Length: 521
Image (tube, rainbow, N blue to C red; front, side, top):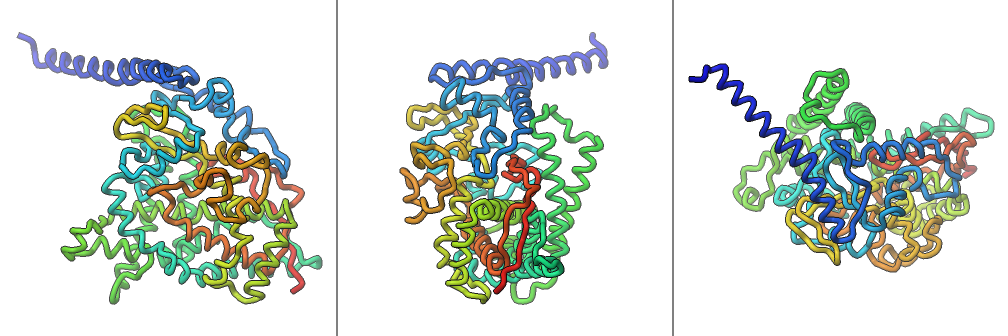
């Protein structure tokens, strides 16, 4: 009769063999081979799968080789810098192609009609791809990443906070925050005889947009907003440093130096957000307020049967995740839109002057309001063209929850789809021969008539999962730009280096040094 020790060893051996079969043989060897073969049968090719690493090594190598590339300021085709692997694989294997993130395939598409069918689908068959654990830790599992009935529930709670009438009411706060930033810059410039000052403009814009989202969405102080901002920026840097590294199962739970630092930042971020939430709970009064945080807290504490039946409830953990999502999205994307807008207006001073004239024509020296900001037609055109050329979010991801056919493309269940919007925004068949050029006039008749298909601009996505905060972002960008244009002219510093980089969002790798000059008004 076998001893207990022998039985235990046999059990461990069976478990080990089972794990090796399921994880190593099936997931890491057989499944990638079967997937590649099935895709080849419908004409989809790509770089060969490499055990464990997939295409990560080649992607990392090509990006490192492209890292030293510097562009002319009039060259807006940054694809050789941020996506050299896509350029190589598309030229080598055609469209669409498949590549590998570890053992997981990614089907990369460039076709507008396929993208439209996927993004506009209301059937619920296309959901967000599983987020990388590092991204999930940074963004939280909020509205951007949840799916199915959870997404419907979150969206119903959050949607009223982004109604246009409420966003217009936030304009005063947006302008006030922008005026505080401009006043500091005015003071610096007035100390110099030439009334000029050089600043890394991307940095005050990040602080400004963090301040605006803190006040408008969460009603929190500048200090708490900055604490959350710095914690998320450090987590973002850690995410980008390791996103292409080999992911060893369980390694992120080990108390390594990097993981301990990450856990400390996550704890700091959560504590800061809980402080903001608890401050609102304590000062409740007759309600929690009608901003984003107030609406979420009402949904968390509601006991009304009708509210429950309409699925308008959130847990406290879900609120914390949404705070992470909206705080990051609220400052990061708008600050980058503003950064690239200032860059383009510096490169094309004739457009800077056109916008300044429009601002003075509509509001003079007064503070902009929600109503007159909507009259800034030329500014809207410039912002849309900036989003086309330098959109903050680079690639959209979806996956089908069942086998799907889109056009001639058969997509098996759970196969991630990557929609290459920066490539599509430069498609001359859709946007015309000047697709690589800065030309805001293409949006003169509105966004749906700017190209040969009405859904050509994908900066905010399209369909039911389109960005809920796009009106907020546009009004905020107009508020800030109008306030800056009233006080300053600006030009790129000679030290500026044009090298856009993918840091989860599209950013200037060496910042945006700009020379601001006070206007004589």
